Length: 234
Ligand SMILES: [Fe+2]
Image (cartoon, rainbow, N blue to C red; front, side, top):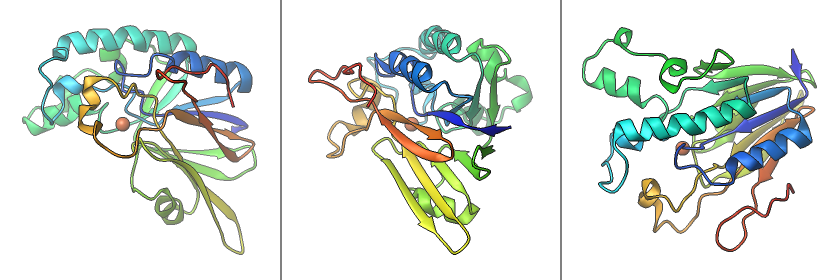
């Protein structure tokens, strides 16, 4: 299938996502009617089992997972079908197991531990054909410069992971025009889970990406004073 309207969701970090993120995504779904929804990773945070320090004022691993499941269910109701790309946060359970010498055969799948149906499918990376006939590659975050990935793979590329990067760039050669897009994130930066970034000069950029008839479009979630969404799609 050649996709005409693709919604790209990145870095929700549930349960530490922005309080208006789901409403924003619902509004985009209504306006652009995506025929493909790709989540390019860090859909859940798993702060409590991170390899970094666990903040003492945040939830236990069990509490964090149970809370995450409630929001994941809500997201599944909005998007019953979604392709999700593996990422550093979401895969923590598997990374932890390997680090401690456990066979992955002991573990549940993403669908099982998040309690979502078969409409959500996890893949390592994703390549699809867009409605203009060109290929597009989706990955969580392979290089700080998305154009390096686009040039290496020789196709349009979408990345998340870099929460403060929100941009589209192009390159062309005599044969084709290729673009790369960084989609920001949908995090609530006020959460303690992101305390590491408190003193960074550059702030996280809240938004996501779309691909309409083969061309990338950034969808910023514009915030008012106080950090809530203006409720306008711009
Ligand atoms: Fe992330």
